Image 1 (tube, rainbow, N blue to C red):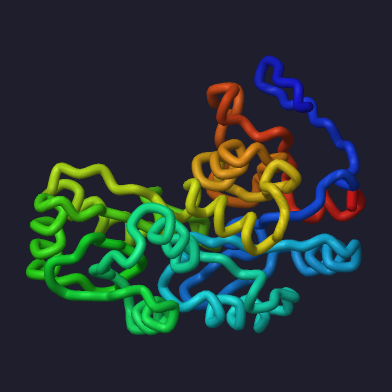
Image 2: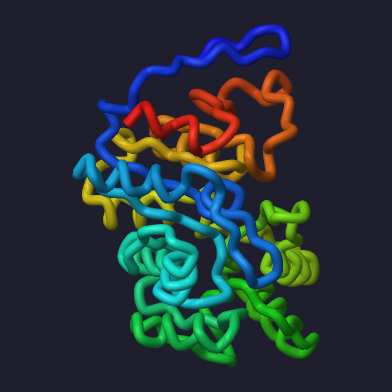
Length: 278
């Protein structure tokens, strides 16, 4: 277990042999995004290859919801990262677990592009434009005020407001990239006086999707990511071993100022530091 003392972090560098599966973040952990280009971080390809060679399952979970999960996986594979379609999870997957658990058969007003609409329709989610049971905010490049108002009125009338993420930004190659999904959800939340329910990271819905895809309990998982408030929070919620990578959004965070219940189990400067521990 990590020891914390006077501004420094003393790390347990134990091997990861006891871990039965892995969950990894994407942006800021395995890649940096510059516009539409993805740049692989040092050690990322080798890490995924070594995990797979060990016979243990892995998934990548990103809060990105601008495209269907299989398109996201293809984009990542194009960089050289060995990721199969079924090894990529996004809130478009985990929202289905929320719906099945909380409101089976619910009608959904979706804020998202053509691909998210098509993906959820294929998954037999009932998408509507009027009188929804749920308003779900994914990523959207364009939002009109009429639709925002219709969504807010639906929430005022009792519809649930779900969002892929409510964090303001994520790591990019040139600094934080502001979340348009969070902006959209915030507009609806302000107008309706509702608090959005996150179904991406961190959420119980995300944990259900991870356990289902890996086929193991989240307490047997190592969760590796760059964001204390999303990745590490998700891992702590699921009882996982949490590893913060300093290559992304939380790179400059003073962890001595983070409440103990929210701290990672350990910290590395880059994903490459984990290679000799598998």
